[in-house]
Length: 65
Image (cartoon, rainbow, N blue to C red):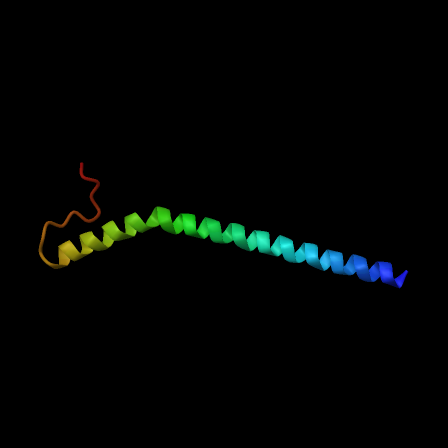
């Protein structure tokens, strides 16, 4: 009976490790996707800030309309 409990405990630990790995992979994929979506916006914002500092046309905060 003890042997069966040991086998079941090892199986449950392995399943838990796999679940944590899947969750970590999903979070990493979501983080990479969010960074990819937001990177263009950050680039544009810093470009506009640089333009304002150097005295070029400053459109920061306007939507062009």
